[in-house]
Length: 105
Image 1 (tube, rainbow, N blue to C red):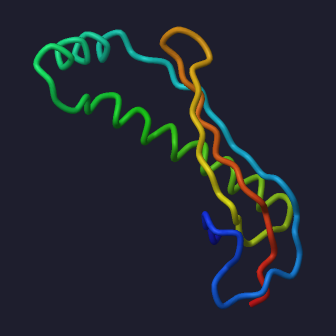
Image 2: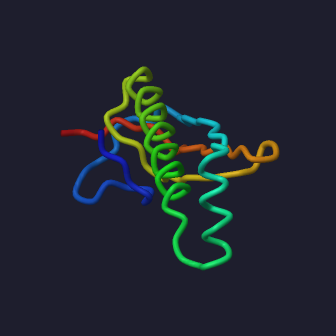
């Protein structure tokens, strides 16, 4: 599956537009990680526990978007974007979305 942030696939022709595809997940903070994160806010530095959590959430959302695109018969997603939002205290949603297309081989 080709995934691009651009509206076109360089060197390829888009033969068909399948429409919007998306995938999402909601991740909650872990109490143990919150304690470690609290310490980091005092001493400074990257909060690796949250970095890892958000990276995993992005992978899940992208995977679900790709499944949506495949189910629609697409072989590429253009205009790909990621968005995050807080849905409740200590939980964030990650949404991956774009336009599913069929690229001529």
